[in-house]
Amino acid sequence: MNERRTYAVEGEPRRSELSVERERVVLAGAILPDMEDEHEGPLAELERLTKTAGAEVAGKVVQRMQKIGSTSCFGKGKTEQLSQLAHEVEADTVIFDNDLTPAQIRNLERIIELKVLDRSELILDIFASHARTHQARLQVELAQLEYTMPRLQRMWSHLERYEGGIGVRGPGERQIETDRRLVRQRKSKLKKELDDISARKEREVRSRAEQFTVSLVGYTNAGKSTLMNALTGAGTLVEDKLFATLDTCTRAWRTDENHTVLLSDTVGFIRRLPHHLVASFHATLEEAVQADLLLHVVDAGHPDCESQTAAARGVLEEIGCGDKPTIMVFNKIDTVEEFSNVALMRLRNPNSVAVSALTREGLDQLSARVRDKLVEVEVELEIDADCGNGKLLAFLAENGTILSREFVGERVHVRVRVHPRHLGQVRRIAPEAVRVK
Image (cartoon, rainbow, N blue to C red; front, side):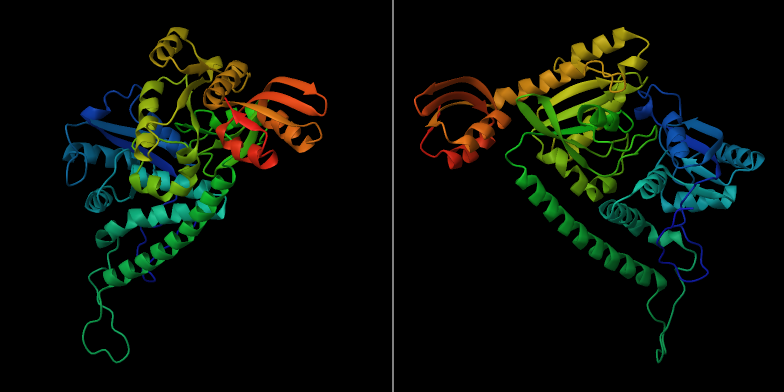
């Protein structure tokens, strides 16, 4: 079981014990009108999330509704059916594919007599189990506290009790105020630590200002890490699980002998991603915010890839990347059964490439497309320098495209294309010799 921080007094029920690893669960979901465009079967994504968390799915219950009920999400009859099924299959937990209020959770647990979790709690549990670095753990804990804070009022049964200190004759502050104060203090500490990490991250990004940066973004399990490994040999973790990657990885990607860019992997997005998760993972998403170019990776073989693409675009809008230059990368084409669907998606997205990170099909075309984007922003220079300026010639060969080179006596005349970010360095190496065409 994953450890969870708790702020309840000793011996009281703890809603923070949310891990579902190795448990038998029943999945439940209210299918609302705005969810009808999701082409997967009901609860298919919730089932993958549950299996990623390490639990066993023992049954499913769905109800199509115009709106979620205020008391227990489902109607009375469907709630009783859910309770009966959960006990028949000897489930430990019921997980809803909707976000529930504390009152709904409390009422459902009284009726079903089992632990009830909602979609956000399940995602938080997965994030907690996949967090590897100190930064990721801080971000997950902050997201958990952001989720917990407004729910303290109904999370524990002891909230109306009073506690008094030594020498206090009257009632002391209620336990709810103690809990809230502890949560606020912990949140403040976490935010300060994350602000320090963000400042370091911004300094790292600025230190790479002279290089063209590319960021992989997209729906979770679209194959971003596999693509990262195929392009750079990064050796990052690859698992057929949702949210396998929570930490940013940046590696050099040599698109050809004259061009090298920095490629970053990022945390995957998901439909109805809780807002507090986006906010908590702002430092991780900073790579995408600061990138020159985004590669939006899509699982082309997934039956619901269009709505997944729309969900990822929504998150990109939320973090301020909606207008950033983007190449759509339709990945996993080796799994596509109906290629007309891929052709239609590419027709709707002219700036796209079809690839398979696993078989390496289409990777050359992707490299060429990124080079085209890089060349679009490059400037052409004419340089007249001393032949002995080896530092200049080596820098140009490594960071630019040599168009022509002519030696006249002890001088060399070079025409070269470079990214504007390299202008400052070229002028520092040869301040008197550069002319921008």
